[in-house]
Length: 441
Ligand code: PGA
Ligand code: ZN
Image 1 (tube, rainbow, N blue to C red):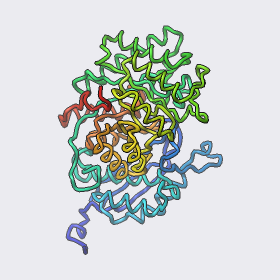
Image 2 (cartoon, rainbow, N blue to C red):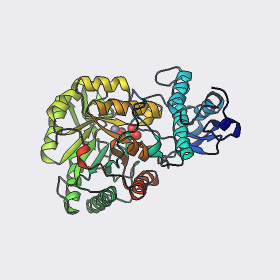
Image 3 (cartoon, helix red, strand yellow):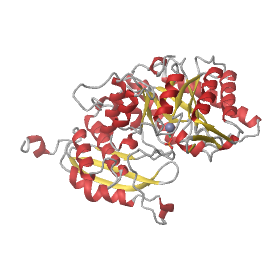
Image 4 (cartoon, rainbow, N blue to C red):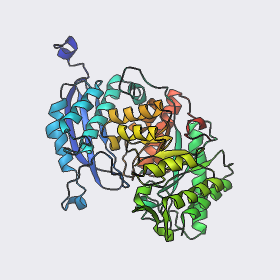
């Protein structure tokens, strides 16, 4: 198509300028920031997140190495955006995000975006997505379209059920305990605002219990959770269950979730719980976890075994059919891995992280595929996150059902919760409620 009158008048959503720079994430590490400016004056800006318990199958995050910022610099990824992607996408329309993502992916040329870095590709994808929302002058969640990338239109927009971190271990808390995340799911809440209020109350009770046991609740972990060396993983579960009880909630109104992040605990064929001096076979480990589901209101378990242990994942899903079995590193927001997980019943829910995929379009396709297969979906932040709030809009607009962002403090966490509160207050969308969890509970 030749130039239109709109082009002539510069009122289109064609991309004019794309600029990237190095910014900091919530752990104080460099990350790629990017601003996409459109001819019509709208712009989108993003600061991309970064994980710590990063899966082997994630799209590749480019780091400079060397001595700057301890090797964590991202100048090469910034240069890729400014020198290669900016001219590549100039003149494309922000509303054609799928085409922009495809052009970027093709330009990198590696399936895991390892030539120029997934952090460079994602910066462009996210800033474009935000710019499109700004140009439409509508809430971002309403401008995302069909996550599958077709023209089926948006899924039913809902405010997601949150899964909120109370207690941290693993790579997010100096391995205070082995399991990375102890979370609660406020299944009895009737609205998002009520969910957040209830969980804050549980966190306050757990903080008091921790202090009584000699902990120091003023110190928080990477995702804003409490942390202390409790001696065993079960001690953290006990503390959480007691906090829930003291806050006055029945187990079916305030339930527990864990993210084992077991890839961090795998040694050969075994699971090593260094904090309590145990080395277990996968079957012995699953016996322990099954025991927990019998003693605690445990409704969701993430990455219960290592990221390449398809047999163990399927066994866990078979043994705990009532529980949401959630794959994070197992799926790495990768379509082929989700397809395998569906055909082998290796889980019943998929964690979706856009930076594991490298673009909004890829992540959307993974979410759509999982949902179409009857799996539950949980949109997730990273442990190194930023002040951005697009994640909340993705969870709403894609009808993800669930969201995981960390705890109820630290601004990179509360920015996402506060955006959901805003959407609930302003746009009046329904709260997803308890039925969105995977498993037959
Ligand atoms: P990560 O942790 O961002 O460090 O990977 C989040 C998670 O494992 O769910
Ligand atoms: Zn995880």
